[in-house]
Amino acid sequence: MSLSTVYGRLARPLLSTIDTVRGRGERDVKPGPDGRPLPPERMLITITGANQVDHEWFWRVGRQDYESLKTVAAQAGIPAERMDAVLDFGGGLGRIARHWIDDAPAIHLADYNRPVVKWVQNHLPQIAAVQNGIEPPLPYDDGTFDLLYAFSVFTHFDDGQQHTWLAEVRRVLRPGGIAILSLLGDREGEAGLEQPELERFRAGEIIVSRGYITSSNACLAWVPQRWLRENLPAGLELERHWDAHDYWWKTTHDFVQLRRVT
Image 1 (tube, rainbow, N blue to C red):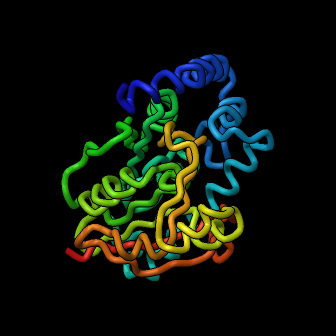
Image 2 (cartoon, one colour):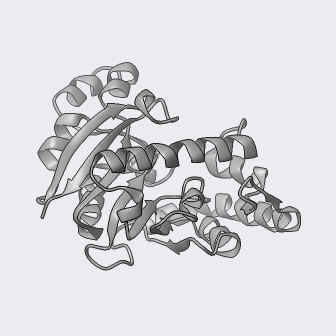
């Protein structure tokens, strides 16, 4: 049985729930501080799996991550006013992407969740949203993006998908462009893994929990820095690593900055 078949069977109840919530929410769309629609709160809860998610949280942390991305990109020599295109990979309901709308670059969003992409297309048409597959490629030409970011995406990929999606990140970045990725890294591995997995992690191995449903939120992948340094595709370099508390709201994730050099 193929991965897509397994995932489709597991995801079908979730997608049905999202479709139902979306249908109810269409009748009661609330604007955010920018005057643009906010997703129904029931849809936010279904997508995130968290009970304490509301519009205030959605807006506040989205704005915070957007500002952090702009700061990091400017420090990397790519200020927003010099960007042509940005990709929010695995961007969900546009929590971060919506804040780029009034900025200089064209903002794109890719996500494998059909109802999520449809909601963004219907309510935030300024974002070029597309549905991607579980495996590459993305529907973009080589060298399209100045900045790509993926929050809580590579945290759900198994070893094979880490390889294929990192290669795809390199492909769609322009030479000199950067990617900001969140990972369950060394800090979380040391805190959350037990033997014998911890020993394998320290030796540079990715540890995957519930890998039979890879790409779903239920699958978790801990990626040591050693693995990342030894397995990046040619032409992609690790420039920076920092703990979440330096910039980001997602305090359980490490973050890395990768640059396409060729």
